[in-house]
Amino acid sequence: MKSHASTLLLALIFPTLSTAADWNQWRGPNRDGLVVDSPQLIDQLPKEGLKPLWISHEDIPSARSGGWASPIVWNDRVYIFAHIKTRLGEGQLPKRKYPYLSPDKRTGMSDEEFAEYEKNRRAEEFSIGKKYRFDEVVYCLDARSGDTLWKNERESVYTRFPQSGSPAVIDGKLYVLGAGRVARCMDASDGKDVWESKLSGEFDDEFLQSSFAVSNGVACVLCGHLFGIDIKSGKVLWQGDPQDTAGTHTSPVVWQHQGQHYFVVNVDRNKTICIESKSGKELWRIESESGHSTPIIVNDLLITYGNSRKKGLRAYQMSLTDAKHLWTFQGSGDSGSSPVVVGDYVYVQGEKRLACVALEDGSTVWQTTLDLANPRYASLIAADNKVFYAWEGLLCFEANPEEFKQLMSAKFNEAGLMAEESTHRKLLNIDELEKSAEGQKKAVSLWRSQIDRQGPLTCTTPAIADGKLYLRMSNKIVCYDLVEH
Image (tube, rainbow, N blue to C red; front, side, top):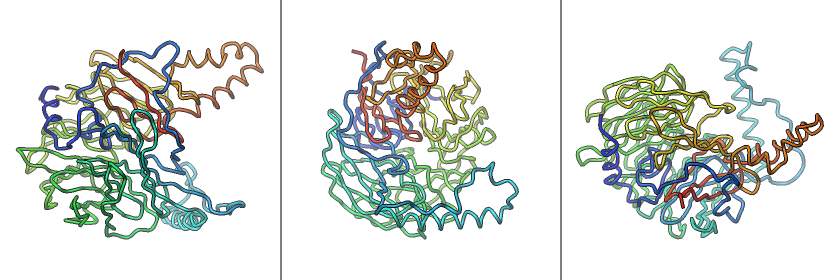
């Protein structure tokens, strides 16, 4: 198995045309969640907490009114995409006849009955959607101050969930997949449109969350199925079979092998394929049991992650003709979270489990349980031999194969202060309040409003560049300086 030095070499030659201080696409410059050349970061939070370096100066709607796209960083600028829903008119919305049914509420319904219910529910949601206006906004912020440098705004369309693919900036051009199957390219310096391309396929209310991978003059994205687009003109160069390359959420990655570039992507719910970047020709296909996660490539090693423990974390040795299965780790699974590889170990989160897995053979090195409520989708990232996970706060632990060593477990208040729970309790006088029964009720209410409702947006992944951490909150982007001074 190759060492971390080989991973560093790969990062230096990988064709993203970004600098060491950039996090220019979903999961970073190599789409693996890893910063390979980071300044030394703090090992723990100051006792008084860490104040933001800056908070964006304007509101940036998120989640149901703006989506879950993750921030990216390029050339001292921060970019974020929002699919914004704005209510038209006043008055009450009609009461839903077909509310969403969680699995436990579908008891007694046949598959056919549930399918009919879902059809009616989507039709009802579409009708209610007509009472809103939808817009797509790409924000460009100054990474040093949080000032808005420009916004690219255009009218958009309704989708069941907000469109949430993260932008990618390659060689000064920003690529993002808009709602309604519209691929877009703009100049990253000023936000001016370069081209847009309506991709083929039926569109009703689909939300397609894939992010572009760009290599060899081709921008590749999953938009119902796989497309390869010319980066200069926006012309579709090739597209995959609508059934065989079906997909909505996972993002392609670039594999560099023997001087050539290939796209590797999870498709059709449980398969991973490798295709030539210029022609779209499929070189191989494996049943990887991968879900919505994004694959990771380390040299010629492929890592995939499924949405259940049975499907698990898997490793394959890639060649131009095949990908040979090496091992499967079945200690966790997640609907969309992607792991991170640091050195010779994989760190993976799923089902409240956090594990360190040997890259060589998939053996469990250590495993622990996270005290979190149903964490899903958010992915791990790593810098300076530290791993970060944003859910209900920010967890940071040492990338240490010997043991799980927690470094930070931060919570956030309305002012953006990132601090340990003990610091927030002291600031809110929680210990004193809890001395009486009435005070305990007040303490619970205070904690929920001041702490639990703050913090990083769930299901998004932070960006980290040049020692700065960028988090998307419910309506802001917040930047923290993690460099050890």
